Structure formats: C-alpha cells, structure tokens
Length: 451
Image (cartoon, rainbow, N blue to C red; front, top):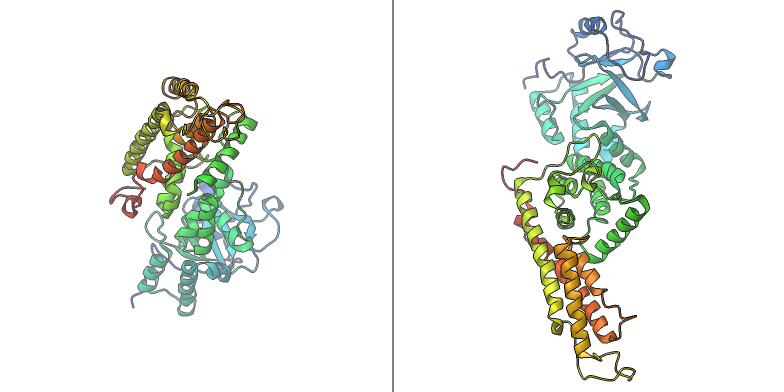
C-alpha cells in the first residue's frame, strides 16, 4: 500500500529531548508566552527538516517549571508555548494528547478501557511503530474511527518525549474534565451554570469518543433539572425559587437555549420538552434581545459562543408559547365555569357531620369563584405578573386561591385544589405536543439544518 507523503501529515515523527537545537532553545520566563520573531525564525529553521508542528526543547519529564529555568515546548507554526496540564501529566503515561495549547500525558490503556474510539485509534498508532510508517488506509481508518478532523481536515500524529502524540481538536477545559472523569470517576454538582459547563463538555466528548457509560451518567445528571416527570419539575422549581430569594433574583440553572442546542448536538431528546418549556416562559424580547441584567444573559457561559437555535426549533418554540398562552386562558375560563370544579351535592348546614364533603353555600361559592376569575384575569392576562407565560405555575396558584384551611366551604376549596392538580398533570403530558415533540420524527433535526 502507498504510504502517505511527509507533508502535510507526518505520523509519529521522532524527536530526541537531547537533540541539538542551540539556535532555537529559549528559556521560559513565564508560564505561557509566544516566541519573538527572531526566536520563531530560528525555531522554524531548526525544525523544518522534520516536518513536525512541535519542537521539544527539554526533557518533558524533567522536574521544575519555567521559574526554575527549564526549557519550553513550542508550536513551530504559531510560536505559542505549550503547557503541561498540572494534574494530567503522568511520567509513566503512554500517550500525549494536545488540546488547544495544553498537553496531557495519559495512559492509552486507561482511555481505551472506557472508549472503543480511543482504543481503536491507539491500536492504529501502535501498529505504525512496528512498520515505521502508516499506510494511507491506516490513516483513513484512524480518522473515521476518531471522527476527528482538524482545521485542515487531517489529524497529525507526532512523537513527544518518547510518547506517541495526537492532536485533539477539542477545548482543553473539556478534555481535562473528560480525562479526570475517566481516571477518578465523574463528580457532578448541583446543575447550576458552573456545573453545567463541566457536565456539558464531558457529555459532548463522551458522545464523540463513544464513552457510553459516562455519557449515560451525564444525561441522567442533567435530567434531574430537565426532567420528564412533573414531580421532578416541581422539585427543580422549588430549588430555583429558593436560590432566587437567597441571591436577589439570580438564576440557578443555565440557559435553556444552551440545553436545547446541547441535546440536539449529542442526540439527547429526553432533555428537550422541559428545556423548551423553560424557554417558553420568557418573552421573545428576553429570548432574542436580553439585556445585561436579564437572567438569560446572565446564564450564558463565559468564553463559549451564544447558543443559536435551529430554524425548526424556533418554529417549535413559537408554537409551544402559543399553546401555553392558550392553556392559561383556558384555565381561567374553567374557573369561571365553577360547576366543572365544584361538586355541590346536597346543601348542608355548616357544622354538620357531612359538611366537609359537600358545598355548604352554592351562591356564596359561585360569587367567590367569580371574584377569583376576575383576580386571575387581571393578574395574569392584563398585568402580566410572574407566571403569565407559565401555565403550570398559574394552575398551582389558582389551586391555592381558596385555601381549605381558611375557607368557609372546605369542599369547594378542596375541589379547587384537586382540579388544579389534575390540570397540571394534563398539561405536563400535553407539553411535548405543544412543542411538536410528541413523535420520534419530531425529535430529529431537519435535514440540512446546522447545529
């Protein structure tokens, strides 16, 4: 089989830490810096014969840091100094992975134990060592197995400090969190914005590198606050409201837009209904033009691109918001038709043995319900106070307007609470249909839509 030309893909180039590179050795005076133009020129000339992106200027296992006068490792093309990760650089590691400008020296057996993708890739790399060069088929197989393309559509294999090295085109932060989870096990937090930043990165890479066990754990963790049951949703909301009280109105959870985009990217449709519902509770102005003091703006992840919904998901959002508004109007109208809630039965005098189960005053209760309808209409439809876009919240509040503890007619008060509970369950079950997520085909992104 034909072997690959040395440029632009040169697999497993060998560099000795003791190689004479006197013109290019530069003492690192800071933890991360770029070479000067003169230094970069020397570095380019001294390494041009190898064809490698990297130049090793020291022993990668040597103790000490830049403040101790040790030499550095630089990218030949950019002149940027590469940094060893402080926790994920093992002297006995068998593979060096580069993500952005961070190097990880880890154990191929540990990565391959969890990921069939890593295992297959490392097998291809090991087979090269015995032959001296990889065939074109080997490289293509490696690229397909890794599902990993760089800026030029190719993956570069090198050899650093005696170890084979591979470039991972992922964020260094995400790679560090992934490797830490593989070595120490995942330690997820409370699903706040900072925790989501970690878990979402792990989920993306666990999906990309086919680490099913870790992927399933990450999705299960996110499902705690993006749940499929109303009971779990209520628990989530209780925690969110308590956090808002403690922090003066700050949002606990990440932007639902980000969650929708993540669910699409990693094929986790279980997260979509609750994420769409959460997003629908904001006005379109808050969604598309959030001010700096708005919760959706505050919940964005620093250093990450703003999430952009696909056109088909924008359509689902608009349809779902419309359905939610109709649901609130229907709830208030149903309260006006109090016969659908109350069960008058035989009218009894107050204080009789059976008065707790039946309406004691039909006329008074009709008047009470009429006043409650006027109050709810003013509050939710005209004043647009909290909950005006949130039918689950509206139903919960309506059910508590006529408290059984203080109401003269405990039967109607309890009937109102039971009605609200039934309505909330009904709406929760209908929610996927509101956002057109009620069939498998609806959960698949439209053909040709971009992520």
